[in-house]
Image (cartoon, rainbow, N blue to C red; front, top):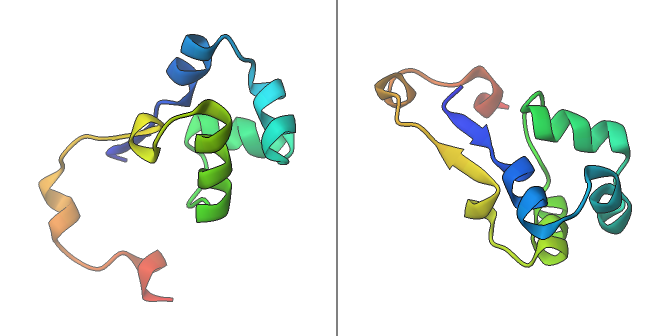
Length: 81
């Protein structure tokens, strides 16, 4: 997937552990681990906002994108909902 989670770099820059961030944001350590590994299909905007508030950053600091021309073709089954 071309969208990558860059949270680990932000945690290192802030000197914070994932456990501390999970507690601050109010999510489980399991949820935090799944997000950090990119094994989630989505994230609530409210959770993303809490992450950004806790880390004093913007969403673009936590996510990165590598262009893939295939992203422009077809319909993502998850988006059809």
